Structures are given as C-alpha cells and as structure tokens.
Amino acid sequence: MGRTGTVGRRALLAAGAAAGAVTLAGCTSEGGTERPGKPSAAERAARAEAALRRSSAATSRTLRERYDAVLAAHPALTGRLTPLRAAVAEQAAALAGDRGSAGNAAPSADTRSADPTGSATPSGSATPGAATSAPGPVPVPADPAVALKELAAVARRTADAHAAALLGAEPEYARLLASVAASGAAHAYLLTEGGRA
Image (cartoon, rainbow, N blue to C red; front, side, top):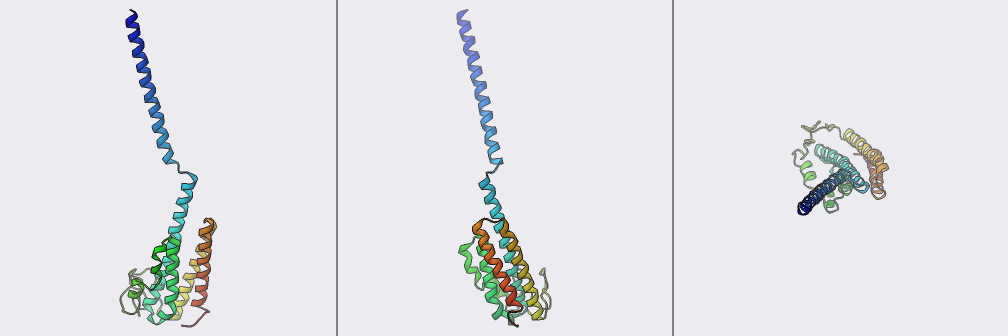
C-alpha cells in the first residue's frame, strides 16, 4: 500500500513537472514571436530614414534623367548642362548614401549615350534632335530655350521636394537635404535668368 502510494505520488509529480515545462515553453515561444512583431523605436527610426533616403535619391535621379533627356535632344547645350547634370548625379548618390558611387556624378555612360551619337538615352527619355522624346515619359521641346525653362521648373520642384522632406529627417540628413535643395534652386536660376542658350 505504502509502495503504491509512493509510485502514485511520483507519477503525479512527474506529470505536474511535465505540464509545467510545456506551459513555460509555450509562454517563452509566445514572447519570442511577439518581440519581432513590434520593432523598437530605433528600428522604426532606421526604417523611416531608409525610406526617406530612397525617396529623396529617386527624386534627384528623376531630375538627372531629365537632364539626360534634354542633353539628348539638344547636344548643343552639352557644355552648359553637363556640369549641372554631374552635380545632380553626385547629389543623388549622396542622398542614397552611396558614397562609393560618387564617380557616377561625372558624365557617365548614360550621359555619353545621351548626347552626341543620336541614340536614345538608357531611360528612353529622348532622341537627339527630335521635338518630342520617343518612348519617354516627358517630351522635350524642340526649342532649346523652352527645354531649358522646363528643365528649370523640374529643378525647382525637386528643390521644393527636398526642402519639404528635411522637416522629417534626422539632423545630419536634414542638413544634406537643405544643401541639395539650395543647389537645386541655384540650378533653376542658372538654367533661366543665369545665362542664355
């Protein structure tokens, strides 16, 4: 009798310990799944900054592509536009955090294919000498003065977009955005009042 009671108690204790271990394991795994689902404040800030970098870089790349389209349509403007286009490419790389790709700022393969040879740009923006760009999203006016005016308007809109974005940026990135926005405003001036085609 005493022996049976001892075996029974042992069985009960073993069953209780096993149930406790299962419950504890369930709590731990639940806690483990909850934690990754809720990013920390630092993770959220890092994601927001990465998204802002992507968006800001894309905005500057759009302006760079517009320069390429105008250069393709009006090769005579190469001397005037190439330094401005190079600055925009450099800014796009800096905004994306691609310090190593700053060489892209110099007139690169896509710029060279855009100007003197008569081939379309890689983005398909324009065909040299054509009044409108072939498959590209925005036509390039046949009149160089009008093309410059429209390019200046794009530069101005890009500057405004960067100025608006800096309000939600971290201090260091906000300074970069402010600098790029000021540069864009200067480009808009140089493309219009600052000189003649």
